[in-house]
Image (cartoon, rainbow, N blue to C red; front, side, top):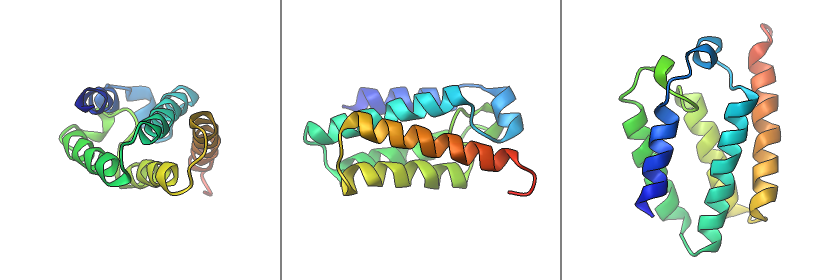
Length: 121
């Protein structure tokens, strides 16, 4: 199971300068984040525990922090970490289908990006 977490770390650290410069997530990033949340639900369904999954996520956050924020894909700062962590916690705390978790994440991510885009947000 370590493979998917390493893949997440690599994906999260990919350069996306234009998105990073705007400090909001693109619809593509939200979609890719939704895929990660769907995979978290599939891992839950396969028997992985909340503690195990969150432990690996925290390890990935540590690795991601080694990269400058403008070279990161999704987790560019503490707010993004908090958002992704809370979404993973919801996967384990309020189980639903993997597609329901993905769709909910996508909606919340896009709304969050829209709030960040507005100067009065």
